[in-house]
Length: 359
Ligand code: GCU
View (cartoon, rainbow, N blue to C red):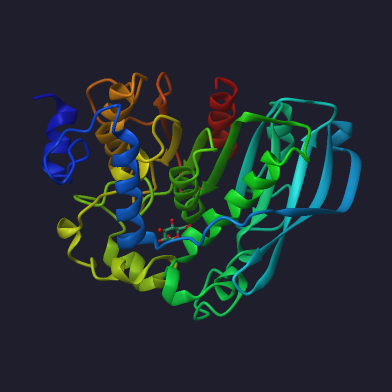
């Protein structure tokens, strides 16, 4: 048995390539299987999102030309849309390379409202010819215990959707996608719109791309537990840890898997698989044992066959666990393992920018 097959065998993962009735998953029925995976992830882990609004309106609150030595313009936008309980709106910072069209475009879920920011080196990203739309996650739903009384959580019946905040942040990324698709913005290459985030927001970026097929790629940096890392056999953070500290990130049901991970009818490879046949870029850091780089990598190994089945290249690696400095990007799943700690660094951004340029 190959090294990777042996590692995956030990994890004893729920079946991806067969339906519950035993019939095989094929390219023809893949969308049906994908819908099932999404249903399981919604009911067991992240909760359900409300239907997409019919229309997202945009207001330009501020426009600044000639920023970043003249290389970009910066717009402060406000997006608004109707919810079950009236209008909801949130700010988005838009940074567009001057005079460029057909730009690869990053929708970035970020921890801070500032641009540039330690996690968002805007000038470097612009220098790759990419546009940026920054969402500040607390503008969507407060990242703390508030009994779902504020932000977008308050705009819908909680009992009806039972969504956690990861799903809410992902929902906001899709509203930015609505704006990009509306034709109002003249710079994006609609076939190269990417959703990106770090850590908890890397989890949200994967959720956004899993549910919204308009995203060509998800860049999930150090997303780890309940993100890109396999849960079964995972080191570092476990379901019991994450639901204790961050219960509001998930639906109620997920909490019941604390200490019962092997009973989950899914694992995180379902989340990656739901992005197929589009692309996923995973970033890991050597010292980020809490996220567990090996379990992040094995998740990619576990789903590679989905892309193969769909006639695309999946995850192309040597038959071994990852080593520091590794970067595997020949297929539709990219993984890099950089040295250092949990962080969204310039080095990580270089990986994501070069990958998006290959799309
Ligand atoms: C905590 C949490 C992780 C999360 C991280 C972050 O460490 O346990 O699951 O990814 O915060 O978002 O920075």
